[in-house]
Image 1 (cartoon, rainbow, N blue to C red):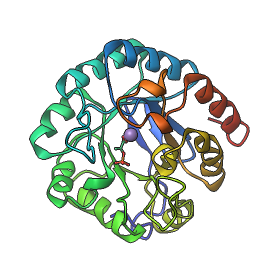
Image 2 (image 1 turned 90 degrees about the horizontal axis):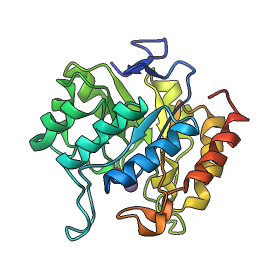
Image 3 (image 1 turned 60 degrees about the vertical axis):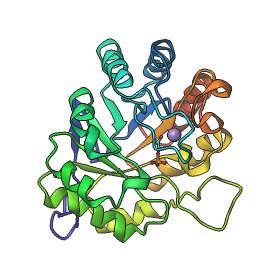
Length: 262
Ligand code: PEP
Ligand code: MN
């Protein structure tokens, strides 16, 4: 179902009025984690002002250490909903498991399946039953074929609205957090009709590399970007090192607008 052979025209997915795919370039931005009302609203206003189409923010966080901040959970979902009411931007947030699926689905517009869950097949089957579009992130060590097979799980179970996301893969390189596989974009454009966006924040782990790789992503034909932004990255409860300050996000938006109409 994800194959171009089955469906030659590019799929366009609408999330509460925002179009993804089919030549649109969709920018999703916001904090890694929702931390407080003040934090979320400050960042939401800032990214909206610079032209972001959707707001990202994690309420349930897949952290490597169980002692790290795990997210504000349902409180965080309520704040995301409030941010949408105020700014008009639809929300994308991660759903980590079936136990919290219904509540995440109720509060938000698009559900993110994180890299660590890309092959959680029972969760993918649950996504197939959802009415929400699914942002499916590539696993840390997953091939493009495996990513497409995971999309197939969601589609075969009834949900045709899948957006793929390249977010860097594990390689021998350690300078960056992951290695951004830019070639995933043209490969997926050859094989599939589904939209593909890039997450340069998790791909690099370093804020200074987010703008150059955003430009490269747009140039290579990605349908959009998902970017972590924080007004005080040094105090962020997760992923501060890769989060852009609002003024750097503004600069990124201006530089990608030179490459394509956003
Ligand atoms: C995130 O988006 O904050 C996240 C945890 O992403 P990934 O699953 O790509 O690591
Ligand atoms: Mn993050």
